[in-house]
Length: 247
Image 1: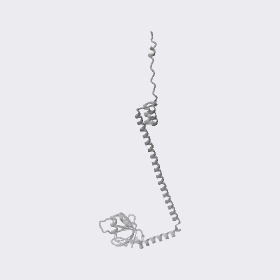
Image 2: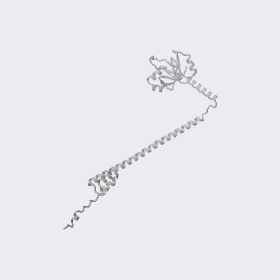
Image 3: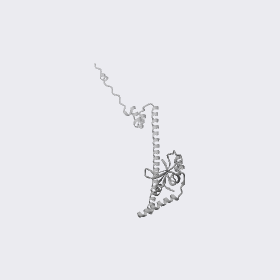
Image 4: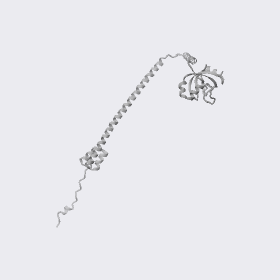
């Protein structure tokens, strides 16, 4: 006789209930470390994942991380505000300085425009002649510092910076013996003075630009002793004087 329970014995067992993905350990860890840690912490406590000590450790770690990020953001905002304020102050100061310069330039231009000017070529030539005559008069009657060519050359050989402070752009009177008379590559007339050191290749060189003074050079020869007035231009190879005249 058939057993009525035989059929029930061979019925397949039901599949176990599937755990929702949001309750799985891997999903909770993914949310905490990669996506949104508050959601991960919530799920961890709700479904009691891990031991209570581990949950407390995870929660403390993420709260500390959040506080550090929050404080760092505040510090960055404050620093950016200070930088922007400093940049604005600098730009305002530069604009104010530029405006001041512009006004000064306008004032100078206005003064120049109001200055009287020659209205005809004849008057212009007369003004130039008067200025040239006055300049030559100042050179012959003004103050000149007396120095020998040797002392001037020695000063520049010892310390060019110090010598420039003493003599450059100053009116000098030099008396010495002519070493050479000639024209340079730009066809400028000049003389050089003898130096006490015969082995020294540098010397004092005096340039003449006035035609009357250049004409006087034609009557001079090497070895003559003369006195020259001129403006010291510093040292470039030789120590040189410009706009010289023979006293």
